[in-house]
Length: 432
Image (cartoon, rainbow, N blue to C red):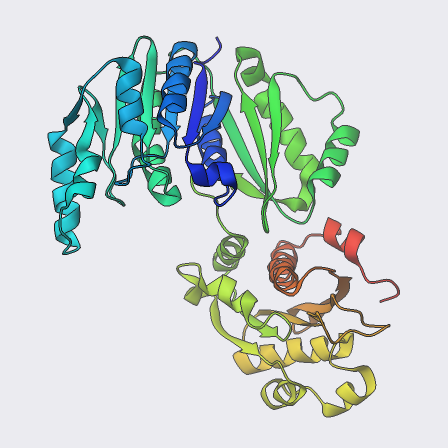
């Protein structure tokens, strides 16, 4: 059975002029997709009352669910409540729940409840309030003919909370019982969308139509989504999911259940299971790897110290890297990162380490070590592995990739992976 027809209406002159980039509709579409609903139509309209009335009237007559985003503020160009009232033939009245919310919101901030604020409590008669715990403008909903209409604030973080905590549960509860929505989300690292599609084309050429494949690129993790809407697809899910995981190999980080986990959290969980401690020795990443680790609650169980040794002198002082190596090999070299790795293990008494030294740019490169060159050394004292990559990105992207790759190399090392990650296949520095 097909699901209800969903349409989105975005309002605001700023959206039309490009002063604000529309990220709200993408977020709404993604959240709706997670419960098996697709957006059939999306429209952006300027702050023009006649245009809004026309569009709301049309969309309410051609959809089952209409989400209107924006235009709930206190200023004269916020027209959603007035436009909706005209579209459905209702009067505007002061809503008592909205007034209570506004009064409390102003009191908390020591602000005056003035006339512009009170405008946000003037809503279509008979509407239902959708609470906004992060802003002054409440959301509201009405049932008009056969369409459920939800009006939401334009501020992204207000919208997201309202949508995920209140509107989506309401919509989900009203979906047909026989509407199938089964979604599996897998986290992948170290391989791009095109390479991933190539693997699927070559290894799984007969992918079933009943299981929809989707990809969402991110930094650093890529998400692969399997969406099933039929009984036939459900019957095929288990074997084809297993085939896909096998094809992904060690690029597969894990299945997302609830909130996605950062790469560092996956590594920390692995280390905790084996009672191992890790340290870091960073130059070009400036402590970003350690920062990623300590962002995770409970990281102190596996991480006690890291070393940010940006200058050659500090590499020698803090990690006992011999000065002769700099003279012979240079700071960005295999010998230096190996010495950094061993020094960090000795100083911290950790079990595993990751050491990095590179040319972050935009200056400082040379013919044999261009901008983007980075050496990695990782492992334990008796088994240090090394790799040189060329990551030709801007400085911030370079550091982000270095940190993510460093975490992934440790993850693979700990699980005794024997396969070569795609980023090494594609980015290995020639002749190094």
